[in-house]
Image (cartoon, rainbow, N blue to C red; front, side):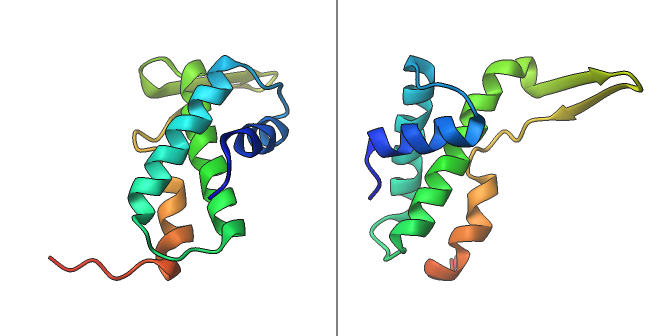
Amino acid sequence: MISLETAAIKLAAYLETSVDTYLMDCCSEALEMVNNYVAGNTVPETVLQRVVVEAAAELWHRRGAPNGIKSFTDVDGGITYRIARDPLNAVRSILKPYLPLAVS
């Protein structure tokens, strides 16, 4: 599994920012969420790295989205969109080929 330090460096590069305490916390939480979701199944290391960065980025972006809503403005006006409530939304489809089919 990807280390916390490696995840933080990759996330900082992905977000074009520097490593700070909040970014490290997002990486730590994403690592735990992905580990729990994968639950011992075999997933290639490169895929695990990608999903940890994606989940951590979702967590990091929540900082600038009070109540789950992010707004941007430019010359032509503004746009508002909702941040996903589940940080694993972005990674489920990436992990799908590597995990067993869920049966209830």
